[in-house]
Amino acid sequence: MSRIYLDNAATTPIDKQVIEVMLPYMENHFGNPSSIHAEGRKAKTAIEEARKTVAKHLNCSIGEIFFTSCGTEANNMAIKGAVKDLEVQTIITTEIEHHCNLHSYEYVHKNYGTEIKYLPLNGDGTIQYEVLEEWLSKADKKTLVSLMYANNEIGNLLDVNKIAQLCHSYNALFHTDTVQAIGHYPIDLTHTKVHFLAGSAHKFHGPKGIGFIYINNDVRLQPYMDGGSQERNMRGGTENVIGIVGLAKALDLACQEMEQRRIYIQSLKHFLKNQLLTNFHDVQFNGNQEANLYTVLSVSLPENARSETLLMHLDIAGIAVSGGSACNSGAETASHVISKLQNASNRRTIRFSFSHFNTKQELDKVIEVLRSVL
Ligand code: PLP
Image (tube, rainbow, N blue to C red):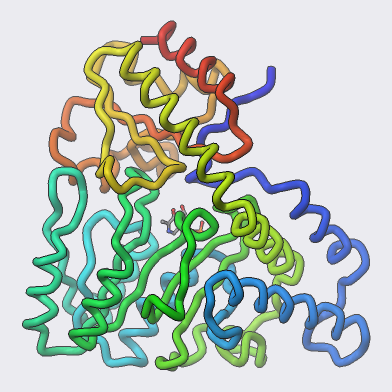
Protein backbone atom coordinates (compact mmCIF):
# COMPACT_ATOMS: atom_id res chain seq x y z
CA MET A 1 0.00 0.00 0.00
CA SER A 2 1.50 3.31 -0.94
CA ARG A 3 1.26 5.84 1.85
CA ILE A 4 -0.18 9.31 1.65
CA TYR A 5 2.10 11.83 3.29
CA LEU A 6 0.34 15.02 4.41
CA ASP A 7 2.67 16.12 7.19
CA ASN A 8 4.99 18.36 5.22
CA ALA A 9 5.13 21.01 7.94
CA ALA A 10 6.84 18.40 10.14
CA THR A 11 9.30 17.50 7.43
CA THR A 12 9.32 17.05 3.66
CA PRO A 13 10.55 14.14 1.57
CA ILE A 14 13.94 14.87 0.08
CA ASP A 15 13.86 15.65 -3.63
CA LYS A 16 15.69 13.14 -5.87
CA GLN A 17 17.48 16.00 -7.63
CA VAL A 18 18.80 17.06 -4.23
CA ILE A 19 20.06 13.55 -3.48
CA GLU A 20 21.84 13.54 -6.84
CA VAL A 21 23.92 16.59 -6.01
CA MET A 22 24.68 15.29 -2.53
CA LEU A 23 25.87 11.84 -3.61
CA PRO A 24 29.26 12.87 -5.05
CA TYR A 25 30.03 14.56 -1.71
CA MET A 26 29.34 11.28 0.07
CA GLU A 27 31.18 9.07 -2.36
CA ASN A 28 34.11 11.08 -3.68
CA HIS A 29 34.47 14.63 -2.45
CA PHE A 30 34.96 13.80 1.19
CA GLY A 31 37.69 16.33 1.93
CA ASN A 32 37.67 18.48 5.04
CA PRO A 33 36.90 22.05 3.92
CA SER A 34 39.61 23.36 6.25
CA SER A 35 42.35 21.31 4.51
CA ILE A 36 44.45 23.16 2.00
CA HIS A 37 44.91 20.25 -0.45
CA ALA A 38 42.72 19.68 -3.51
CA GLU A 39 40.21 17.48 -1.64
CA GLY A 40 39.77 20.16 1.00
CA ARG A 41 39.50 22.94 -1.52
CA LYS A 42 36.83 21.04 -3.44
CA ALA A 43 34.70 20.82 -0.29
CA LYS A 44 35.35 24.44 0.63
CA THR A 45 34.33 25.60 -2.83
CA ALA A 46 31.07 23.65 -2.56
CA ILE A 47 30.24 25.40 0.73
CA GLU A 48 30.96 28.82 -0.68
CA GLU A 49 28.92 28.11 -3.81
CA ALA A 50 26.04 27.02 -1.58
CA ARG A 51 26.35 30.20 0.49
CA LYS A 52 26.20 32.22 -2.72
CA THR A 53 23.01 30.41 -3.75
CA VAL A 54 21.31 31.08 -0.40
CA ALA A 55 22.39 34.75 -0.44
CA LYS A 56 21.14 35.15 -4.01
CA HIS A 57 17.68 33.84 -3.13
CA LEU A 58 17.39 36.04 -0.05
CA ASN A 59 18.95 39.05 -1.78
CA CYS A 60 21.56 39.58 0.90
CA SER A 61 25.33 39.44 0.98
CA ILE A 62 27.16 36.12 1.31
CA GLY A 63 28.84 37.30 4.51
CA GLU A 64 25.44 37.41 6.18
CA ILE A 65 24.73 33.67 5.81
CA PHE A 66 26.05 31.14 8.36
CA PHE A 67 25.26 27.44 8.13
CA THR A 68 23.96 25.77 11.28
CA SER A 69 22.82 22.27 12.20
CA CYS A 70 19.10 23.15 11.97
CA GLY A 71 16.47 25.85 12.35
CA THR A 72 16.44 25.34 16.11
CA GLU A 73 20.11 26.23 16.36
CA ALA A 74 19.68 29.31 14.16
CA ASN A 75 16.83 30.62 16.31
CA ASN A 76 18.74 29.91 19.55
CA MET A 77 21.73 31.75 18.13
CA ALA A 78 19.67 34.83 17.23
CA ILE A 79 17.77 35.14 20.51
CA LYS A 80 20.62 34.30 22.88
CA GLY A 81 23.13 36.29 20.81
CA ALA A 82 20.91 39.38 20.82
CA VAL A 83 20.76 39.28 24.61
CA LYS A 84 24.39 38.33 25.30
CA ASP A 85 26.11 40.47 22.69
CA LEU A 86 23.75 43.27 21.73
CA GLU A 87 22.44 44.37 25.10
CA VAL A 88 18.85 43.42 24.40
CA GLN A 89 16.90 43.68 27.65
CA THR A 90 13.35 43.24 26.38
CA ILE A 91 11.93 40.72 23.91
CA ILE A 92 8.49 41.26 22.38
CA THR A 93 6.95 38.09 21.02
CA THR A 94 3.87 35.83 21.23
CA GLU A 95 3.02 32.64 23.07
CA ILE A 96 2.50 30.75 19.82
CA GLU A 97 6.07 30.79 18.52
CA HIS A 98 7.89 27.49 17.93
CA HIS A 99 9.27 25.89 21.09
CA CYS A 100 12.87 26.51 20.05
CA ASN A 101 12.10 30.23 20.37
CA LEU A 102 9.84 30.03 23.42
CA HIS A 103 12.42 28.00 25.32
CA SER A 104 15.19 30.39 24.28
CA TYR A 105 13.18 33.34 25.68
CA GLU A 106 12.77 31.40 28.92
CA TYR A 107 16.50 30.75 28.98
CA VAL A 108 17.50 34.40 28.62
CA HIS A 109 14.83 35.47 31.08
CA LYS A 110 16.15 33.04 33.67
CA ASN A 111 19.85 33.60 33.06
CA TYR A 112 20.03 37.25 32.04
CA GLY A 113 16.86 38.72 33.52
CA THR A 114 15.54 39.63 30.06
CA GLU A 115 11.99 40.91 30.15
CA ILE A 116 9.72 38.84 27.87
CA LYS A 117 6.55 40.58 26.72
CA TYR A 118 3.88 38.48 24.98
CA LEU A 119 1.61 40.34 22.61
CA PRO A 120 -2.13 39.76 23.09
CA LEU A 121 -3.60 37.56 20.38
CA ASN A 122 -6.91 37.79 18.54
CA GLY A 123 -9.16 34.71 18.53
CA ASP A 124 -7.54 33.46 15.32
CA GLY A 125 -4.01 33.82 16.69
CA THR A 126 -3.17 37.04 14.84
CA ILE A 127 -1.35 39.87 16.56
CA GLN A 128 -2.53 43.44 16.86
CA TYR A 129 0.01 45.58 15.06
CA GLU A 130 -1.15 48.70 16.95
CA VAL A 131 -0.29 47.08 20.27
CA LEU A 132 3.18 46.20 19.00
CA GLU A 133 3.64 49.80 17.87
CA GLU A 134 2.43 51.13 21.20
CA TRP A 135 4.83 48.88 23.11
CA LEU A 136 7.72 49.81 20.84
CA SER A 137 6.97 53.51 21.17
CA LYS A 138 7.15 53.20 24.96
CA ALA A 139 10.18 50.91 25.11
CA ASP A 140 13.00 52.45 27.12
CA LYS A 141 15.38 49.49 26.88
CA LYS A 142 17.05 47.81 23.92
CA THR A 143 14.32 45.63 22.41
CA LEU A 144 14.21 42.57 20.15
CA VAL A 145 10.97 41.81 18.33
CA SER A 146 10.90 38.06 17.70
CA LEU A 147 7.98 36.84 15.59
CA MET A 148 7.61 33.93 13.20
CA TYR A 149 6.88 34.55 9.53
CA ALA A 150 4.53 31.56 9.26
CA ASN A 151 3.08 29.53 12.11
CA ASN A 152 3.81 25.82 11.70
CA GLU A 153 0.56 24.68 13.33
CA ILE A 154 -2.11 27.08 12.08
CA GLY A 155 -0.34 28.71 9.14
CA ASN A 156 -0.83 32.34 10.21
CA LEU A 157 1.33 34.64 8.14
CA LEU A 158 2.99 37.72 9.56
CA ASP A 159 3.26 40.99 7.66
CA VAL A 160 7.03 40.90 7.86
CA ASN A 161 7.50 44.16 5.95
CA LYS A 162 5.25 46.00 8.33
CA ILE A 163 7.04 44.63 11.39
CA ALA A 164 10.43 45.39 9.86
CA GLN A 165 9.35 49.00 9.28
CA LEU A 166 8.01 49.33 12.81
CA CYS A 167 11.24 47.96 14.26
CA HIS A 168 13.23 50.31 12.10
CA SER A 169 11.15 53.33 13.20
CA TYR A 170 11.56 52.52 16.88
CA ASN A 171 15.16 51.35 16.71
CA ALA A 172 14.37 47.76 17.74
CA LEU A 173 16.04 44.62 16.47
CA PHE A 174 13.94 42.15 14.49
CA HIS A 175 14.29 38.36 14.47
CA THR A 176 11.95 36.24 12.38
CA ASP A 177 11.70 32.46 12.30
CA THR A 178 11.18 31.76 8.60
CA VAL A 179 11.54 27.98 8.84
CA GLN A 180 8.06 27.37 7.38
CA ALA A 181 8.22 30.22 4.85
CA ILE A 182 11.61 29.87 3.17
CA GLY A 183 11.23 28.45 -0.30
CA HIS A 184 7.46 29.14 -0.28
CA TYR A 185 7.47 32.95 -0.24
CA PRO A 186 9.92 35.39 -1.79
CA ILE A 187 12.13 37.00 0.83
CA ASP A 188 14.15 40.07 -0.08
CA LEU A 189 16.46 41.10 2.72
CA THR A 190 17.80 44.13 0.91
CA HIS A 191 14.35 45.67 0.95
CA THR A 192 13.05 44.20 4.21
CA LYS A 193 15.16 45.14 7.19
CA VAL A 194 15.51 42.03 9.31
CA HIS A 195 18.39 41.47 11.71
CA PHE A 196 18.12 37.71 12.16
CA LEU A 197 16.32 35.04 10.16
CA ALA A 198 16.36 31.25 10.43
CA GLY A 199 15.93 28.54 7.79
CA SER A 200 16.00 24.73 7.73
CA ALA A 201 16.55 22.52 4.66
CA HIS A 202 14.25 19.66 5.62
CA LYS A 203 11.18 21.91 5.34
CA PHE A 204 11.80 22.51 1.63
CA HIS A 205 12.75 19.04 0.38
CA GLY A 206 16.36 19.20 1.50
CA PRO A 207 18.17 16.99 4.03
CA LYS A 208 17.72 17.02 7.79
CA GLY A 209 20.43 18.30 10.11
CA ILE A 210 21.27 21.43 8.16
CA GLY A 211 19.97 24.97 8.43
CA PHE A 212 21.24 28.51 8.33
CA ILE A 213 21.02 31.84 10.03
CA TYR A 214 21.05 35.22 8.32
CA ILE A 215 22.71 37.87 10.47
CA ASN A 216 22.45 41.38 9.11
CA ASN A 217 25.85 43.03 8.60
CA ASP A 218 24.82 45.89 10.89
CA VAL A 219 24.96 43.59 13.92
CA ARG A 220 27.84 41.51 15.24
CA LEU A 221 27.44 38.44 17.41
CA GLN A 222 30.13 36.55 19.29
CA PRO A 223 30.83 32.95 18.15
CA TYR A 224 27.99 30.63 19.07
CA MET A 225 30.15 27.53 19.12
CA ASP A 226 33.81 27.80 20.08
CA GLY A 227 36.22 25.79 17.99
CA GLY A 228 38.00 26.25 14.69
CA SER A 229 37.57 29.16 12.34
CA GLN A 230 34.71 27.60 10.37
CA GLU A 231 31.83 29.86 9.31
CA ARG A 232 34.13 32.86 9.70
CA ASN A 233 34.75 32.04 13.36
CA MET A 234 31.04 32.13 14.19
CA ARG A 235 30.47 28.41 14.50
CA GLY A 236 33.37 26.05 15.07
CA GLY A 237 33.14 22.45 13.89
CA THR A 238 33.75 20.70 10.58
CA GLU A 239 30.98 21.71 8.23
CA ASN A 240 28.21 19.38 7.06
CA VAL A 241 29.32 19.67 3.44
CA ILE A 242 26.82 17.08 2.17
CA GLY A 243 23.96 18.82 3.93
CA ILE A 244 25.04 22.28 2.82
CA VAL A 245 25.20 21.18 -0.82
CA GLY A 246 21.74 19.62 -0.47
CA LEU A 247 20.29 22.69 1.25
CA ALA A 248 21.44 24.96 -1.56
CA LYS A 249 20.06 22.69 -4.28
CA ALA A 250 16.71 22.32 -2.50
CA LEU A 251 16.42 26.07 -2.02
CA ASP A 252 17.38 26.69 -5.62
CA LEU A 253 14.64 24.33 -6.83
CA ALA A 254 12.07 25.76 -4.41
CA CYS A 255 12.78 29.32 -5.52
CA GLN A 256 12.87 28.52 -9.22
CA GLU A 257 9.60 26.60 -9.05
CA MET A 258 8.00 28.72 -6.34
CA GLU A 259 5.14 30.12 -8.38
CA GLN A 260 4.09 26.88 -10.04
CA ARG A 261 4.37 24.95 -6.78
CA ARG A 262 2.34 27.63 -4.98
CA ILE A 263 -0.48 27.56 -7.51
CA TYR A 264 -0.62 23.77 -7.44
CA ILE A 265 -0.42 23.38 -3.64
CA GLN A 266 -2.96 26.16 -3.15
CA SER A 267 -5.38 24.27 -5.41
CA LEU A 268 -4.92 21.13 -3.30
CA LYS A 269 -5.60 23.03 -0.11
CA HIS A 270 -8.67 24.65 -1.65
CA PHE A 271 -9.96 21.30 -2.81
CA LEU A 272 -9.54 19.64 0.58
CA LYS A 273 -11.13 22.59 2.36
CA ASN A 274 -14.21 22.40 0.14
CA GLN A 275 -14.45 18.63 0.41
CA LEU A 276 -14.30 18.81 4.20
CA LEU A 277 -17.03 21.45 4.29
CA THR A 278 -19.21 19.41 1.93
CA ASN A 279 -18.77 16.07 3.65
CA PHE A 280 -18.70 16.88 7.34
CA HIS A 281 -20.82 18.77 9.78
CA ASP A 282 -19.44 21.71 11.78
CA VAL A 283 -15.94 21.82 10.31
CA GLN A 284 -13.91 24.90 11.17
CA PHE A 285 -10.45 26.02 10.15
CA ASN A 286 -7.93 27.24 12.67
CA GLY A 287 -5.95 30.41 12.22
CA ASN A 288 -6.32 33.47 10.05
CA GLN A 289 -7.82 32.23 6.80
CA GLU A 290 -7.15 35.53 5.01
CA ALA A 291 -3.38 35.32 5.37
CA ASN A 292 -2.50 31.65 5.71
CA LEU A 293 0.46 29.56 4.71
CA TYR A 294 -0.69 27.67 1.60
CA THR A 295 1.06 24.48 2.65
CA VAL A 296 -0.93 24.16 5.90
CA LEU A 297 -4.60 23.46 6.64
CA SER A 298 -5.46 23.20 10.31
CA VAL A 299 -8.90 21.69 10.72
CA SER A 300 -11.02 21.77 13.84
CA LEU A 301 -13.67 19.07 14.23
CA PRO A 302 -16.35 18.60 16.88
CA GLU A 303 -15.42 15.98 19.41
CA ASN A 304 -17.02 12.57 18.94
CA ALA A 305 -16.33 9.00 20.01
CA ARG A 306 -14.03 8.31 17.04
CA SER A 307 -12.21 11.62 16.84
CA GLU A 308 -9.94 10.77 19.78
CA THR A 309 -8.29 8.01 17.78
CA LEU A 310 -8.62 9.70 14.40
CA LEU A 311 -4.90 10.12 13.75
CA MET A 312 -4.32 6.46 14.55
CA HIS A 313 -7.10 5.39 12.18
CA LEU A 314 -5.68 7.58 9.44
CA ASP A 315 -2.21 6.18 10.03
CA ILE A 316 -3.49 2.61 9.82
CA ALA A 317 -5.25 3.54 6.58
CA GLY A 318 -1.90 4.78 5.22
CA ILE A 319 -2.33 8.51 5.79
CA ALA A 320 0.23 10.55 7.71
CA VAL A 321 -1.10 13.79 9.20
CA SER A 322 -0.50 15.57 12.44
CA GLY A 323 -2.75 16.54 15.36
CA GLY A 324 -3.11 19.76 17.22
CA SER A 325 -0.95 18.49 19.99
CA ALA A 326 2.65 17.94 20.79
CA CYS A 327 3.78 14.40 21.35
CA ASN A 328 6.72 14.33 23.73
CA SER A 329 7.94 10.94 24.92
CA GLY A 330 4.69 9.37 23.80
CA ALA A 331 2.53 11.63 25.96
CA GLU A 332 0.04 13.77 24.09
CA THR A 333 -0.28 17.25 25.52
CA ALA A 334 -2.53 20.02 24.26
CA SER A 335 -0.85 22.21 21.66
CA HIS A 336 0.46 25.51 23.02
CA VAL A 337 -0.78 27.13 19.81
CA ILE A 338 -4.28 25.67 19.52
CA SER A 339 -4.96 26.25 23.22
CA LYS A 340 -4.46 30.00 22.68
CA LEU A 341 -7.19 30.19 20.03
CA GLN A 342 -10.81 31.08 20.56
CA ASN A 343 -13.18 28.07 20.84
CA ALA A 344 -10.25 25.75 21.35
CA SER A 345 -11.93 23.49 23.87
CA ASN A 346 -13.95 20.37 23.06
CA ARG A 347 -12.75 20.14 19.50
CA ARG A 348 -10.15 17.98 17.77
CA THR A 349 -7.52 19.38 15.46
CA ILE A 350 -5.95 17.77 12.44
CA ARG A 351 -3.18 19.53 10.56
CA PHE A 352 -2.86 18.62 6.92
CA SER A 353 0.29 19.99 5.32
CA PHE A 354 0.96 19.67 1.63
CA SER A 355 3.79 19.61 -0.86
CA HIS A 356 3.91 19.62 -4.65
CA PHE A 357 4.36 15.82 -4.47
CA ASN A 358 0.76 15.38 -3.23
CA THR A 359 -2.13 14.74 -5.61
CA LYS A 360 -5.87 15.34 -5.73
CA GLN A 361 -6.40 11.54 -5.81
CA GLU A 362 -4.66 11.31 -2.45
CA LEU A 363 -7.06 13.88 -1.04
CA ASP A 364 -10.06 11.92 -2.41
CA LYS A 365 -8.73 8.94 -0.48
CA VAL A 366 -8.36 11.05 2.68
CA ILE A 367 -12.01 12.12 2.46
CA GLU A 368 -13.10 8.53 1.88
CA VAL A 369 -11.18 7.34 4.95
CA LEU A 370 -12.37 10.23 7.08
CA ARG A 371 -15.97 9.48 6.10
CA SER A 372 -15.58 5.85 7.11
CA VAL A 373 -13.94 6.71 10.44
CA LEU A 374 -16.12 9.63 11.47
N1 PLP B 1 10.65 26.86 13.60
C1 PLP B 1 9.53 26.39 13.02
C2 PLP B 1 8.43 27.33 12.70
C3 PLP B 1 9.41 25.03 12.73
O1 PLP B 1 8.30 24.57 12.17
C4 PLP B 1 10.48 24.17 13.06
C5 PLP B 1 10.37 22.71 12.83
O2 PLP B 1 9.34 22.12 13.06
C6 PLP B 1 11.63 24.71 13.63
C7 PLP B 1 11.68 26.07 13.89
C8 PLP B 1 12.81 23.87 13.98
O3 PLP B 1 13.52 23.51 12.82
P1 PLP B 1 14.55 22.28 12.86
O4 PLP B 1 13.72 21.03 12.80
O5 PLP B 1 15.41 22.46 11.66
O6 PLP B 1 15.31 22.41 14.11
